[in-house]
Length: 270
Image 1 (spheres, rainbow, N blue to C red):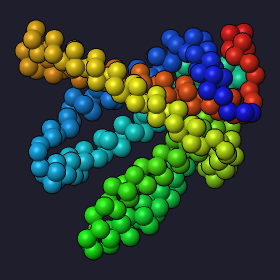
Image 2 (image 1 turned 90 degrees about the vertical axis):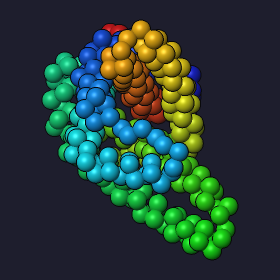
Image 3 (image 1 turned 135 degrees about the vertical axis):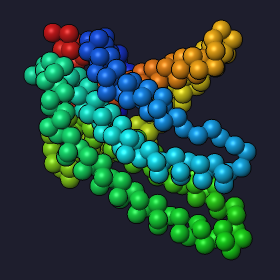
């Protein structure tokens, strides 16, 4: 089907209207709660003026917390798959059925994401090696160009060509290689348009989250003690980021249906 921003937006809103309470329930347990717990028990180190110190602090932070970060990613992946099954499966499963279905395909989905990460890691190595050599040779101007190239490559692949991978695995339950081929086929010719759409959504959501967080943070610090204010800020930040993440999942579901030539949005309410 021809790529259409209007069709994707209309389908996303239709999915939201048809399934909002159930999506909110799954997102609350599998996205919001893990984000809140990680932020509360393993707060990220605060930045300092020295870039090297920041890098060392982040390295030490992830060295200690990586098992919990990995568990967080697995739980969120389960929630993502469950939401997509709930939205797109024509058998109209219950919330419990969607979660069970997500757990069944989770190992294959994690394998697919590992394959993608491995391929991108090789691409990163190929790009970074000549950039590093040129920087050491004195051509520092190539560093921002290399960083931009890597950002565009990762964005195009992850948010453009493979944006519908989770939806394909949730609905079609394909093997990883087959799902990757299917994702590339569905998004052929639309990679940059999809990347741009998701980038705009993430940027708009991020700006809105920062604005709300700034207001809530200021009021909380005026009205409450430091510990309670910090928790309120974390609570609101986790809620906003989880809502944005869940909305992006809805958009990817709409992308899958629109690019795959699905039925009209009216069928969502039947």
